[in-house]
Image 1: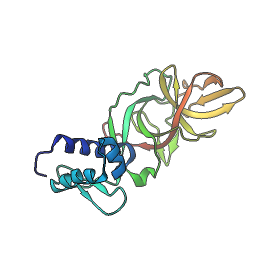
Image 2: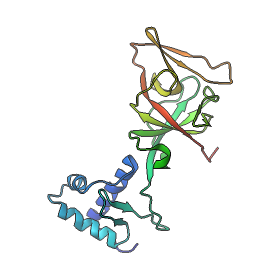
Image 3: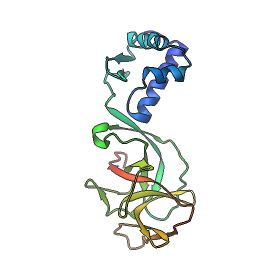
Image 4: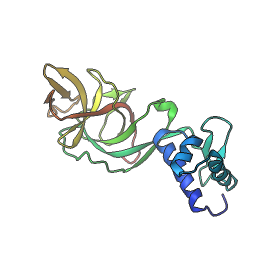
Length: 216
């Protein structure tokens, strides 16, 4: 890569990166035009051509055919989806605040998670789900879970629920006039949580994948 970017070129590159991180694909020319406040697609193409010449992107003739080039070794990351790590999920009693912390971003091959949207990740805290598995991977303390927000879920699915502003990961079951969040644990101290069906408890998403955390 060579050449100094103009302020507008930096803005274009930022928008492309953010779209990749949020969606796993590049923005369209029209989306870039609207985000940049440019009246014509031709104006967008001028900036893209400059970025390509300077080695920050390369383009193909396919729809959304803008591809990022990694700074150090020119590896293309167009097949990766950026999934933000927003904090911790309590696998025990709800204790850790569910406020989004933006710890970082997991880069996950889209073949692993499919074409699912509205994804985020949390780090498991506790042992109340240490016997549960998704695709053969246990929900052990310290591991990452990938959650699909607003996904459909059924009895027995593993979900993330928000209770008193704390996130907890449990199995979901709908009972008579109540919701039961129950553990799947080797620790007998972990017990189900019974919630009135009309409470403000929010099921924030369904856990679709468990990933190793190399830092533990």
